[in-house]
Image 1 (tube, rainbow, N blue to C red):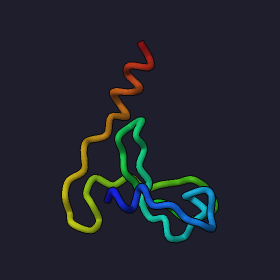
Image 2: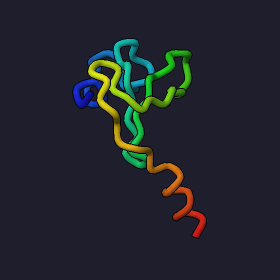
Image 3: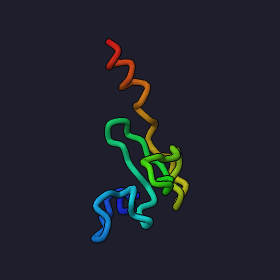
Image 4: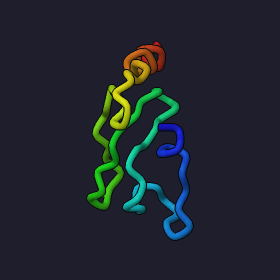
Length: 70
């Protein structure tokens, strides 16, 4: 998983433009997602590693938004 979220491309400057980039990681929310290559920056959130099936850490999105509201 670490390899797939940290790999870089010598042709594409943006990960979402590279067809070889499959997984995105958001450190802000501690979330992983499969990149939707439709010309935008959409991802489909995942809870398990697609290669080994290991459960990924729970998202911190709700906690982040709750803290931001305070």
